Amino acid sequence: MNENLKLEDIVSLAKRRGFVYQGSDVYGGLSGTWDYGPLGVSLKRNIMNLWWSMFVDERDDMYGVDAAILMNQKVWQASGHVDTFTDPLVECSNCKGRFRADKLDNPNKCPGCGKEGTFGEARAFNMMFKTNVGPVADESSISYLRPETAQGIFTNYKNVVDNFYPDLPFGIAQMGKAFRNEISPRDFVFRAREFEQMEIEYFVHPDKWEEAFEHWVAKCKEWFEALGLPASSVHELEVPEDDRAHYSKRTIDFEFDYPIGREELMGLAYRTDFDLRNIERVSKKSMEYQVKGTNEKFVPHVIEPSFGVERALMAVLVSAYREDEQNGEKRIYLALPEHLAPVKYAVSPLLKNKPELVEKAREVYKKLAKQNPGRVMWDDNGNIGKRYRRQDEIGTPYCVVIDFQTLEDDTVTVRERDTTVQKRLQTDELTTKQ
Ligand code: GAP
Image 1 (cartoon, protein in one colour):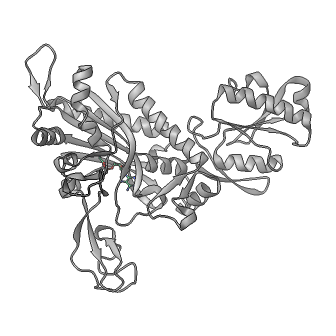
Image 2 (tube, protein in one colour):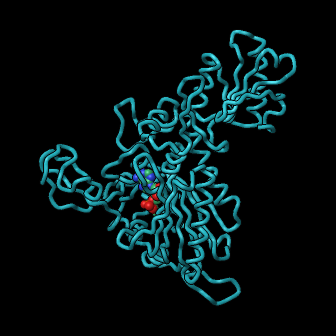
Image 3 (cartoon, helix red, strand yellow):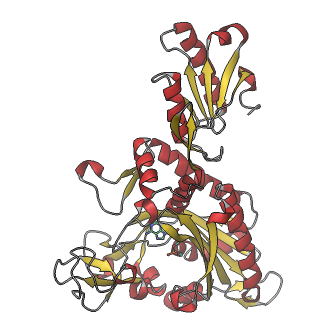
């Protein structure tokens, strides 16, 4: 990986090539929000679809759900989020700037105005976005934009058990938006106020949580490999008791070497029976699981692998970012794994003012697009050299060029992104021979 890579290099490429834009950019932006452009949507979807395939579709012990973002306020009272989902906030008496106390470089110096000794006592700031559901804004209509997708899983645990009678261990998965009113959103999509999570609650017999935890450590590592992250850039941090979330008895943070430093990529937590017990307490409904064919009953314990989409996407971009020199010129390219690249093939006529080349190129393009839906780009802007540079920067593994020889023998030039090696292939060999 490129040791000198800066966050600005990634942000700049993401913007100029249509991956990620500042949210509400045209109005000066909205802090902590990001919009995905055409290529960003594809990359993000490829990551999320890969996750769903690996962790839901390819397993027979997993069930998917898609719960509402707005939930009954009792969910967040029972889960402890109303009381404890807070960050420490300090305010500067000089410039009135507000900051997260535990993230300050110097706890006595305001990063806004530079004055020292201007902070009072830190206070607990709840990070949930509060709203009201329906036309009457009173205590009973309070709701929150969910700060984690996990609770939509716990609240559906009983439905899934009653409908599908799964054997233990089994898991329920969900992916979707989460919202946190972060005091200091920062570092591109790394810490945003609106982001996406991909979460699993894996329900186990209370005596078997340790083996399930180890199972998920191994699965997380397979996931990092599928994303193309170098193993040397991913690190396991055993989170000490004082730093663990209120519900966890053991947590491992998987950290990644981002250009901003070594930071959390995702978390794996042993949540015990904390959430199901709280649902029992507040809803007065039993969350017990009965082992089939026996009288054994208990509330299952839970292992939770919690993946952040944006942090995965950022790690993928960082891992793929490369610079080299081609014909004496600096080149930037993204060595994305083929299954994640937004575009797999770019198709071009060698010259766009030769109708016979354009017609043949259109034919090849249509055929490839049918075989690889959504993953083929038509590109006839600028000369071939410029097209290659542009496609390299968005991580397209193969550029297919139609020239005069194509008209004679139906072969095309296929140029490979990382090596820049070009070979000639029959058009019908295109999807099978790279
Ligand atoms: N259900 C457990 C849970 O939400 P978390 O550690 O608070 O645990 C899980 O969040 C993951 O969600 C993090 O590891 C990270 O990948 C992602 N995440 C959390 N806050 C985020 C934020 N403000 N911006 C982007 N991603 C975030």
